[in-house]
Each structure stands twice: as structure tokens, then as C-alpha cells.
Image (cartoon, rainbow, N blue to C red):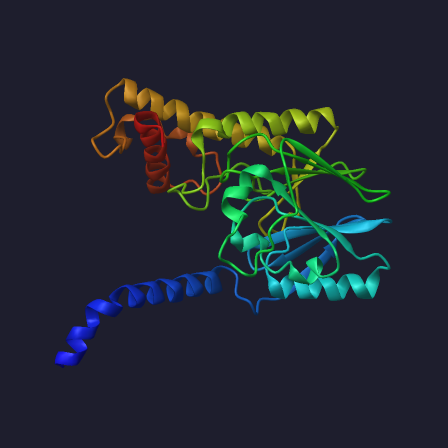
Length: 307
């Protein structure tokens, strides 16, 4: 017993780190189990969507190459590689990361070995350069505002408008299909409450301007539909969802600002919910008053402390 007690302080940090690693692995297994089925579906002759668990990515097939938009993980990447090899003469030439979160961008090594170029926005560099996850291939190209990929008869334009879902989320425009792919920020079922009401990745300072810029991008390029990064029965959503989702966040922000002005925010940044009008929020999907309370708290924290 004395020996065990003597060793405990020496190894306590290792034990903590080990437990945290196990918990992280279990959480990832719940949200996207490695054994989950991978499905691939044609949206057009040249644009395919692939799903696993709750996540969705894209394959863009050009006559001069293939682009993978978010490989998701190793199992998905291997199955995509097998599918492409079996059905197309051209191989993967480009892999695009829509942002830096590992639940969407691991497993690309199989494409790297074939010479594919990996691309992300430059704001992702902080999170991807020298990261400790061996399954995340570091990008070859970190672009600034726009980047164009030419695949012969297919063109992919990547656009960055500022922090929104994390620091480096981009919009992916696909032509001539006139489609927009936006991961983790929009729901193809319509404007809705976010899945996580604590908003750990949301950036209130720039979110509304980012959504406005996406609206302008869609209008300028005659885009009528978008694809989201979450698996859904609706592969395509109407482009008007972007403006309606922007209206949701504008409503959240104005409600938080009004509560601050009227002194209805406590020391912990919670708003007195009985003193605000909840009716305008009820039209949005997944409405939940408790979730709304947490969402508003995130905004009052931003208004009070800039975070």
C-alpha cells in the first residue's frame, strides 16, 4: 500500500490523460462509429454525396481528375478510393478540407500516396500545422480568400468570408451544377436551432456577415440549392435557407442586445426568459426554450466580454 501511495502522485497526470483519451474515443465512436455504413449516391452525373453516420462529404468527378470534399475518416476514404478505382479512369487529384475539425478530415493518406493536393483556408493552419493526429494529412495549400480547382469539365471555387463555424469554414461552389456545399452551418431541412446550444464553435462577431456573403455568392452565380455537411433525407436545401438562418441569428443577437439594454441579464449572463417574446423563435426547427436560454447566454457573454 505504501508503494502504491508513493507512486500515485507520479502517475496521476498520465492516468488523467489516459482517461480523457478513452472518453474522447468513446464519444467519437458514438457520433461516427468506424463500423458505420458508408453510402454513396449520385446527385448529378458528376456530383456524388457520401454519408457515414451523421456526416456527409462530396465527390466531384471531372474528366481531368476527382476532388474529395472532406474525406471524413479512414474507413470512408478507403471505401471512396475503392469506389473511384472501380468506376472511373481518373484518380483523386484534390482533397479539400472545409474546416479544421477532425470529425470531417481524417483518413486522407490513401489519396496523398496517389499524389493528391490537399487544400484548406489559411486560417486552418493554426490547427493543422504540426497537429498531433497522424490521420490528418496537413494541407499542401493554404489559400487566402478564394481558390479555384479546375477538373476539366468541372470547376470548384472555394470561398472564405471569415470565422463562423470555427475559424476557417469555407463555402464550396460547384459549376456547372450550380450547387453550394456548406458544412456544419446550415440544415437542408430549413432554418433551425443549432444541434449544440452552447455554441462552442460559433463566432458571433462575424457569423451574420459570413451568411450575408454566402447569400451574395449564391445570387451572383445563379445558385438555387445547397448541400449541407450533415446526413439528411434532404440532400438539397433551398438557397433561401441561408437568409432565413441569418435572420435566426439576427433575432438572437437583437434579443440579447435588448435584454442587456433593459437590465434583464443576471451576473452569469442568463436572460430572464419570462421577460422576452419567445413567439418569433417558435417557427424555427428544433425550437426548445432551454436551448434558447443557453444560446442567448452565449450572445450576452459575447456582448459583455467579447468572447
